[in-house]
Image 1: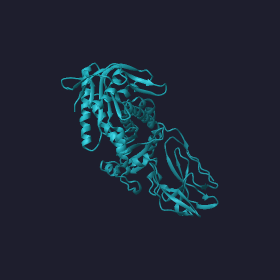
Image 2: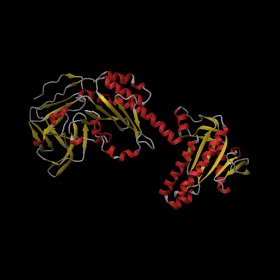
Image 3: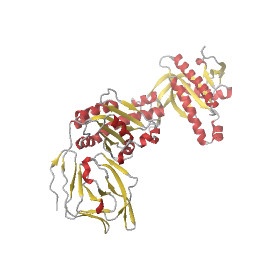
Image 4: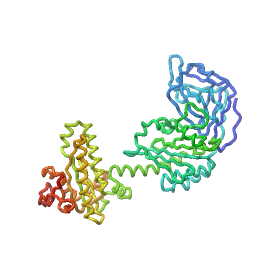
Length: 513
């Protein structure tokens, strides 16, 4: 027995048809379901799925488990355990108890999960799925030829929304959530609303993962790899009603879908679309976007990789240095000789603090110390090059104005001292010693063939570190070479000081608190 042949189709489609014969399901030699009322679902790109009326299942099924998956064409799938004899198969059976209109024929039916011990026997029935063509449209041509040349993810998000409208998809709002590799932001969230010129960009922190608004949102379920979420607004779907739906309903929305955007590393990002058309989205609408989603993902992935590279470089080597590396200065020896003020800021009594505080409290205090020092340096135009144990090395390039570079470095040093005093008053026992020197240094890549470090090398860098050490003995938190002394920053001359591993004595002065 076979079904009638299907015509060639070029649309994304779902078709549910009855199977005219006896269909059975087995676990080993045990018959677990038998029916003459089975349904087969043909869905573009997916293998045919067989559904049994629930009353024709011959073994016990549990109440719905906690597992849910989502489909923008079928709705929310609930899963049940199946008991056969002494064996129980977890989540072996799924059903769409409140299917979307495209799949209403499978209401009251169950399917058996792939990968379980269940075997479906069609007897003499032969399946004849529709012949599929390639789904194409002007949207595909735009994604192939124009979209890759857009400069920013914001430009692409806005242009994508406009193209959806041009292609007859009645979107009133789209949003894209892209997860990031960044120390302080979890991702980038782009939101487009019809009729608004500007795109909204949000940078949620990692606290989003514990926030109820996210945990109770379609974004959470989709990003967990549970499929696409569809909500026909105005229709009561108890299993997948989310708080955001009520907000969209008040804005006149009629349909909502959240689809996964897969990156090549397995990350699941999320594209959402909202419609204000009285009939919402058609199956063809969603099918077209679904078919294009992998291409959309790749374009967003390129933008994300660029942002990730920039974010990682800025995190580990600083904004100015990161820009140089991204600009192509990645070979050993690449760099410049520059004139700059160099700061070396060292935490005092670190060994004793580790013993007194314990490892965890010490790390917390050290991070507070680094936050304070880094903020002060950046506020005065400097850049942290690296953390060396519990010390900070920073550079203030003079950019043609040596006095300004020295003045900003000194101002940063004095602000560090003041802000650390506040931390000590608040109970954080962190103090420091700062050395400042000025001179010509090499600013660039050094290291082995396979492992490079972008840093400063030169006399001034060495002197700043030695002056910081000397300040601990001399009783000053800031010691600077004599060329830092100005009327605005008087200090105590210390004469020519012999420093370890520095050939000539260095004239310097101490800055009192």
